[in-house]
Image (tube, rainbow, N blue to C red; front, side, top):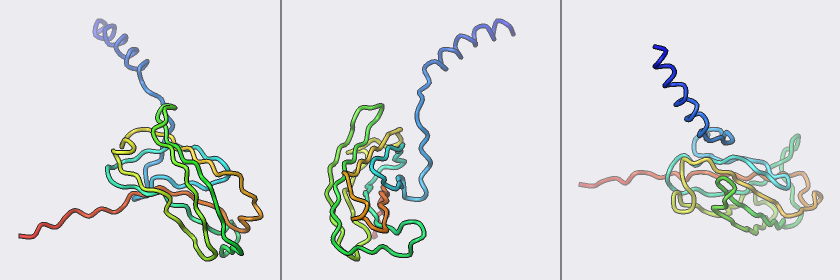
Length: 158
């Protein structure tokens, strides 16, 4: 028994030394895989669980305690989105978007997994919002969501 433990101990130490550390990414709620409020710059873990198409959407929502978003003029925004794995960039996108009064959401871009990004891999998503005057945003805040598109299996006709 002791001989078995003496052989097993070095093996366990070697396996433990090679373990990879990463930031925990919460499992997705349904199709939603990234859901963050933008305040300048945001860096958060990202894990794409399934193969398929994903879309990034920017949502204008009321600030806490407010009932509705009121824009008196069009709102133009510039975003830089990057996704990296172990600090090696995999994807960089610069997006310009404009909200007209009454608009609440805009689709920024589409991703095909695994063509653009690997699935079931620990990634890190960094989003930076170019300087924005808080008076222009008014009583609104910005939320960025990355969602998996619903894909139905084809129906076979006989």
